[in-house]
Length: 459
View (cartoon, rainbow, N blue to C red):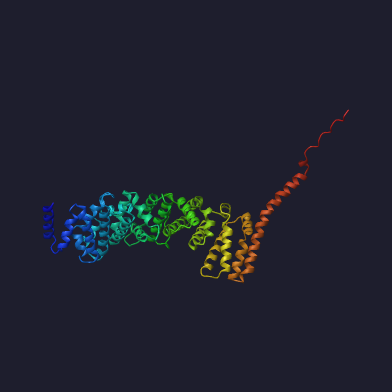
């Protein structure tokens, strides 16, 4: 073994002139096969890079990445300290070597199975090691986005637990969650212009949602990463909506949103992702997709979301309700009132609150509530119009309209009165007509039937 170490040192000195002797000696210990030597040797290499005593490209050129890949390919219980030091070294090399423009040095980070072995450690039992692996992946992805997308796609398709572990780490802002979420945003393919390639990303999204469907929070985080890269203000193509619906994740996301609102759970990325996912599907031009969301229990969840103290939940609820009640939609006022009778009282309460409170944001909240009530009125049949009146929707709308524009009060009241009278007359007119027909029938000779026969006299 001693002869082999001396020979390796001689070869490295001849092939890599100018390499410090300390680096050569440390690399000999890294390749020794003795854990007692390898663990501190990898830590010393990390210190060399961290304190800039040796250039990062020098550590890469002497073959450090090859050894790191070998260490990460070992089982989780082989040597946890060695694997932790190897991931830390890889992170510092990716950070400090990012300034190097040498293409050969950069290509070594994405060569062979380094990304795959590193991604495998996202589901390591040691949470600190898993977070370190997430940070290393984020920095490697920053080096070459296109090459990383290809490598990481192969990694999470090969190992089913990789994507779920990464999304699980990104569910919150604490504990390295922001770094894990950044890695999730790096996994989507880009076109030549630097925008998301939706044609390739849509089937990837379907597979990613199916892989993380066991926990709806993880699936919501994956979609939040997707929509962040795509751009929240851009229209989502129908092929993406098809992928979301076909993945079967919509009912699970609705259930999670209801549970999160009831229990006050704090998963920011998961909550934002679930709201964005449902809003995307509800805004689809395909009525079957909107019908699917309505049948998944969303209507029953809306009253609690509208009454929530969380402004984001309230905004999401009004957006979803407006999308469901859009022109030509499959959901009408009757279905909303039957499935969720608490929607109208919650909207009226919000509208009255906004009327009484002149604070920041109250006007916008009241405007959203008014739009939802107007959308309900547009799709309301005569009977539903009466139910809206009983719930106090017209009076709240009148008060809000007069508060914003006093001159609009009489016109608004006249329009409302005509609409309500027509609804009442139509509804009760049918009842009165039916009652009149029945009365005429019972008063007619046919209703009395034939005259009864005379009974024989008693003898």
